[in-house]
Length: 447
Image (cartoon, rainbow, N blue to C red; front, side, top):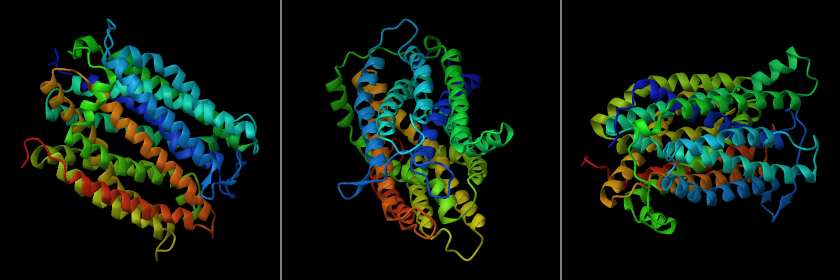
């Protein structure tokens, strides 16, 4: 049990850490494939070859997949380091502090290729900088998430803190989605001749801002004041087995896995949906994200109220089904009998409803799973649980980015867009599968 209840000011401070991490991870998710493998109308140079390997894979799919796989393997070791830490200032914050500057540097370097043309050196550069970024950002986010079960004591407090965390994540997406607008502003205002240079200056600014946000959490929260935790004595292999033997946790992980493949496919494809399927300007991206944020905010209090009244499970299952239906709509973008802007705004507004709950409730649910495990075993293995979750999330994101990039083989330009549309169908199937699996989850205290 914690010493002092976490006040609202510290809950907001906690959310800043997620916002900073979200800015950088969404720069990678939203811009990376578009930056290195742009459509012909983008005004950006192609930086790596589009040669097909093994008949189905393009090179960027293999690079991003390899980077994520290395990162996923690294997660449990960071978790064990954090869970067993004897640092006098706490198990989490000191490790998070170490990760901030390297995360900022590597995120920037990912978008600073050695040559502004197709080059073998760009392939090596992207591979190593991606691994560096993923490893450093993991070193921050695993201890960060492990703080939640220690900072929030009751189910209601967990949902509230998860809501603040979700707000941070959504604001991070909104900031990252403004990259194209800010790049256009820099290019026009400072007479930057090349679009790629304007993009790089923009990303540098956003990375620094993200680092400041992450630092706020580290400086504001006194871990020893708000957390009471006992360093774990369980060996890594044993801790992993204990986590994976938890039946409820397995249902959670499998559903989470399917969901994150789907959402990664859609995140990676956003700029293609806008510029290719709907033939709209890149600058509309930030307006879409602002719309999604505002619509989501309307439903945040509703999610908090319903979670307390009817439980979290039924909300999550309903949200996954609604999101599946929404993702199916991607296949029909540009073919519907009304304006292209109306189509994308309608899709974003509908998607914002399930995303509101799916951004809040999973971390609160996982925190309760962890709390029950700690009370039964007498061991505090918070980071191990989050490491296992993020291991599968990253494998899912690896598949998501790889599948999206592979589908582009079947068309990624105006008039030749089948590859982009097929991603909507795949997202539909995966979210529906996640809903079916999570329906088997047994929620404590709810019949």
